[in-house]
Image 1 (tube, rainbow, N blue to C red):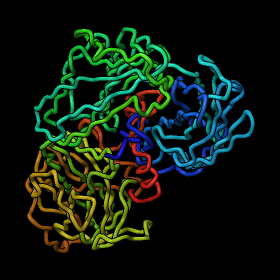
Image 2 (image 1 turned 45 degrees about the horizontal axis):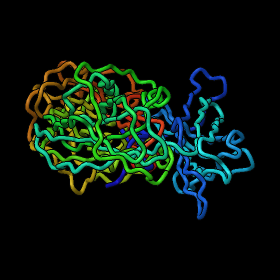
Image 3 (image 1 turned 180 degrees about the horizontal axis):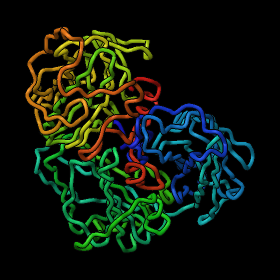
Image 4 (image 1 turned 60 degrees about the horizontal axis):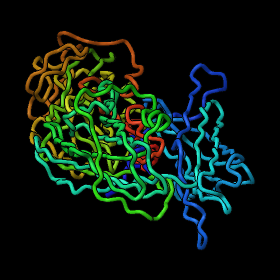
Length: 589
């Protein structure tokens, strides 16, 4: 199983599921804005509030801990919200002198890092919307350090035309080390299936934990029906495109002894809902505390549950003399993930439009598709787009404005270098998620070069691979195609469903022809009745897509950030940053 390393997705990914990421696979915006501009971006640096270190051994090499530093771009514009410039991170190491030694994991990110005395510097390029790994510090206890010794590392950032909020993380020699155990879930489900989740964890550290913070994250197709009184909950905003995470932060009281294992007094119940398809459940454990809760919330609004109190009880007797591994020396073992595949379908319904105009005029048309469910579709692990809208331009017309997510291709659907002049055909990718009820509207503007009666162009929602166009989750391929009809004689152009429209978006759809209409030249050279025209070209919008519960833009990757969930603000701190980089490089529009 590929670990989430945010939505990714989040975020988009490095490590495990919490660096939201789940990251939007975003296109960088290009050069940085000039200093002092009103829209100067502000990027937030983050990471774990505190990390424990293995005590320096009497013999052998010291064991290292990993401190993952992240950078969050708060922009929700996946097409234009990226920062396309160099940036520098500076690490002040003066406070950990005699406490810890620091090196960098050069394989975990693209940053070039160097430690010089009490300072370290990392240089990199490009910050995509959402949260992404910036640098991983490999930290060991310093020789001669004592248990309880502590110090902080302060991280600051610089970039032309942008600012960074600094971040401080604490290192302590010795402490707790909470380890989450993997549960044996049934991962092949049907809608409505329920199963128990007896969350179990151990404290393998050198001291007791004073309370634990249990973090539960689950995607749109899953639910934990019970809302506990000692848990607080947040859900991704349905009007903001993303993965659709629900996150619960549960403060469980008690002294959790070093060497002991604990389980929930009452197992959780996890349900596959009617909209489940590909879904993920993330469960994570940290020592509780105000700083940890703040880091996990990441600025998102949470509401407390009203049900019973969630409690943990010993699973077996304490093992005195357990190996001291320090407090979360390896935060990766605090978290486990489970992927589920539910037998379900999603009906993607294409819709076209009608527009009329005389030769030389420009008309507007709204085409696209709706997900009429019942399932939502998300490619959280791969970060690949869910589908593509394939639009063939009607005969006698030329596209003068298109959504930014669309790119011109040749008449047979092949790559086309020229993206400036009108193309005979356009493909428009979705993102890695399409929510149930979502609507991807694509506004085009077309010039009528030659007035033909009933000129039609296909609008098809298909797989992203042209050679294999079938949507594997769609049970009704017949409604995957609709038509844009110019100067038609009536009717409509939708492939079925409840919305669609005329050239101004106000028409009522009806069943389309089974193939593109055969156009005839207008004897008068003028348009048919009910013309809807504009006098020129211009922009057809930046992204396309609207309404219906959102979710047509991705949050990107999914990675374990020790600083916490960042579930709502960071799309649950989950993102596929490798996919984001690949797509930002031009693989997808």
